[in-house]
View 1 (cartoon, chains in turn green, orange):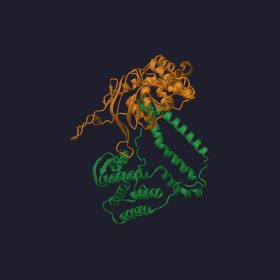
View 2: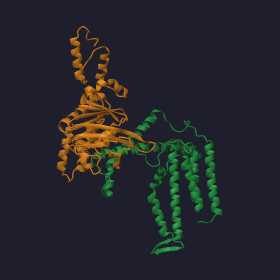
View 3: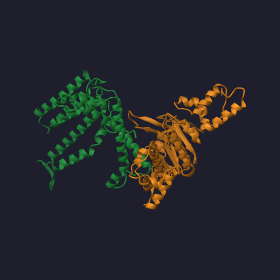
View 4: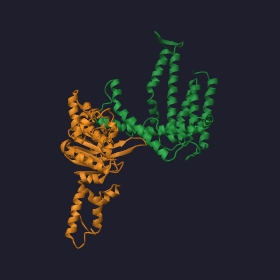
Length: 270
Length: 313
C-alpha cells in the first residue's frame, strides 16, 4: 500500500537536493546532449564518472539508483540484442541468413545499452532529488519566454503539478480498491492476457470514478478560494541561484566541452 | 473460527526513509462468536492488523524471519510469530488464501467506492462467482444475491437491474456489504463501517451488523474510533496504540480507564465522561456504559439519595 514507486522523491538533505530546480533541469538536458555527443568510450566514461559523482553527492543509496535501471532492463537487452544481430559491419564473427554478428555490432550495442542506462539513471536522479512542487516551479520558470507567444505557461505548470501530486494518491487508491476486490476473491495474477485485462475492470471503474470525484472536489476547492489563474500570483518559495548552482553549472559545462574535445581529438577506442 | 495472533510485527517500506513500523509484537486472540471491537487513533496499526486476517497483507515471504532466530550469546531467543484464523496458518506460504478469503469477509472503509458492475445483481454476485469452484447457474446466483440483499435490508426485485451508481449513499454501502457477505463468511471484518454516515444511518448500520452476527456470520470484528459505537455494541474491545495492543477488555471494564484512553488520544463514550464527572462529585455509578444502563443507574441513585436532590446529580 505504501510502497514507494520508482522515481519518487527521496527525502534526504544533500548538495544535489538543494540545487535550483531550473539548473537541475538544464543540467539534465546538457547531460543528455553530452551522452549523445560522446562517440567513444572516453566520452562515455566521463559521463558515467560525472553521474557517479552526482549520485554520491545526492546521498541516494546505489540500490535505489539501480532499481530505476531494473525497470528498463528488458528494453536495454532487447535493443542491444537487435543491434547485435542486425548492425552489419566488417569484422564478421557469425552469419546466418539476415543475422550477422560483427565486432562493430557488438561495440555499437554495448554503447547503446550504456547510453540508455545513463539516460535512465540521470533522469530518475532528477525526480529522486527534486520535489514535484519545485520541479514544476522550475519548468514554469524555464518556459516563461513562451508566454510571449501566448502559451498559458502557468496553467500548464499547474496541470503538471496537479498530475504529479495525484500520482501517489491514485496509487494508494488503486491499492485500496485492489485489496477490496481481492477480498472478494478477484484474481489478478493467473490466466492469459485477455483474462488479466478483464480482471482489471473491477479496479479501473472505481478508480476512474474516484479520480473524477477528486477532480470535481479539487475544482470546487479552488473555486471556493477564488483561484483565477496566473496573473499577479506570487510564489511562496522564490527560486534563487546560489554557489552550489555555479558549481553544478561548471561541472555541466566542463562535461559537454570535454566530451566535444574528446570527440575531436581522441579517435580510438571506437 | 478462532483468531490467534502472537508476536505479530509488520513494517511498511522496510529499509527506506519511509520505513514505518505499523505493528510491533502484537498478540491478540478473538474467540469464535464474538462481536469484537478494535479501537485506536489514526496510525495505531488497527487497519494493518485486520488486513492480515485474510492474507491481504502477508508476512514477508522470507519466513525465516518469523521462525525463532538463533539467540545471540546472552540473549533470549525471539518468540515465533503465530497467526492463525481457524485452521488456516497464515505464517505458512502454502496456505490456501482463496479459501481463507472466502471464510473471512472484509469490508473496507467506504466500501461503496469499490462498486463497479453495471447492475446491483452483478456487483453482489462478483465475489460469489470468484469463489465458487464450478460455474453457478443464474438461479443459484439469484437466490444467493436475493438472500444477501434481504439480510442487509434491500429489495432484490426492485434493485437487481439498477446501476449501483444510481443508489443513495446508504443503499450503496448496503449493496457493498451484501457483496462481501454473499459468500457467507464465518468471520466478518469491517473497517469503520459507520464512517461518514449520519446518526440515523450509523444506528441502522450497527443494527444491520447485529442482525448479521445473529443470523449470518459467527464472528464480527469492527474497527472504529467511535467509542460510543464500541461501548454500545461489542462484547470485547482491543485498544491499539502506536502499533501495540494496549489492552483487551469488555467495554464495561475498558471505560473505567477513561483517563488512560484520553492520554492515548482516544475519546471515551459520553456515559464514561458523565461517570467521571459524577465521581469527582463523590457519586459512584457502576454501569456498563450503555446509555440505557447508565440512565437506569443514575435514576436509581437519585431515588435512593433523595437528600442530595435529583437536580445536582
